[in-house]
Length: 97
Image 1 (cartoon, helix red, strand yellow):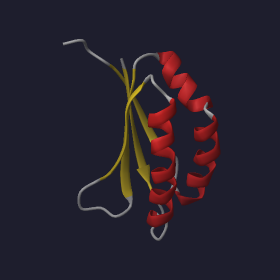
Image 2: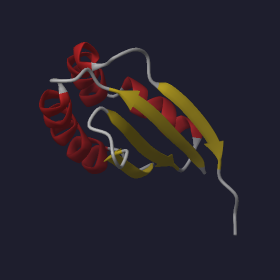
Image 3: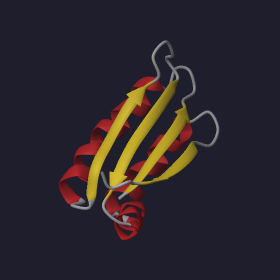
Image 4: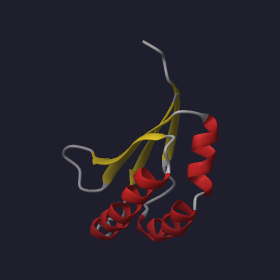
């Protein structure tokens, strides 16, 4: 299993646009990517501009497929203008318990 945490800063005033794009993208990921186990947007408590996307995939191939999917490549550029800098991406290896 592979986990991804993306720490994202959004420009003040762009929160609604960013969230609206994600609201359109997330259901498409969930419906069309069987290897994606979790795809969730959260916002840091006490902040209006700091978000965290939590993702979990079965395999690296599923991560790769997500990045190449038609829905991701369509919606990611719509989020770009909302961002205040590059996201910090943390990649995690799952541990079988």
